[in-house]
Amino acid sequence: MNISVMRAIDNFLGRILIIIFLIFSRFSLRKYAKSHEKIKKILLVKFLGIGTIVNAIPMINKIKQTYPETHISFLTFDSNKDILDNIGIVDEVRSIRSSNLFYFILSNLNTLYWLKQQQFDVCM
Image (cartoon, rainbow, N blue to C red; front, side, top):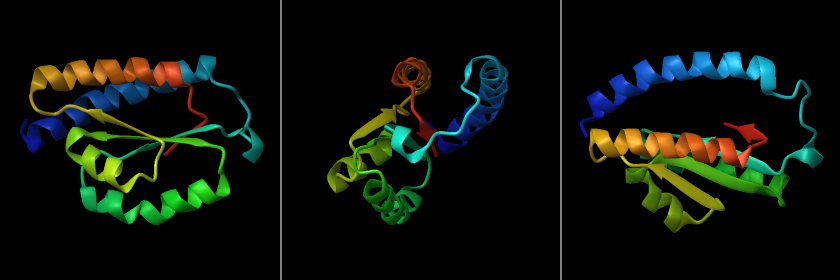
């Protein structure tokens, strides 16, 4: 799928989803900050730009040092999945397929369901 189409969809749907999540969070999320001992699952999100992912490696290593028992997942496009799998610094890599619009939408829906199931403590 064309990058400009992906950005347009991301821009349009992203704004709608942010509003939905903000409304939902007002009613359902816990109202306290997590202490260091309670952080068990971290989600890192970066879609476009493999260079930024490579530049984030020291940050990910620092997170692993600070929270050694924490499960770290990374959400990205399928074009970036291989580099994260080969580096091996995160526990799980989830990707959104971007080969065509149908798979892009289906993959996003699947990812939303997965996010709901995971109940991450921190998302960056």
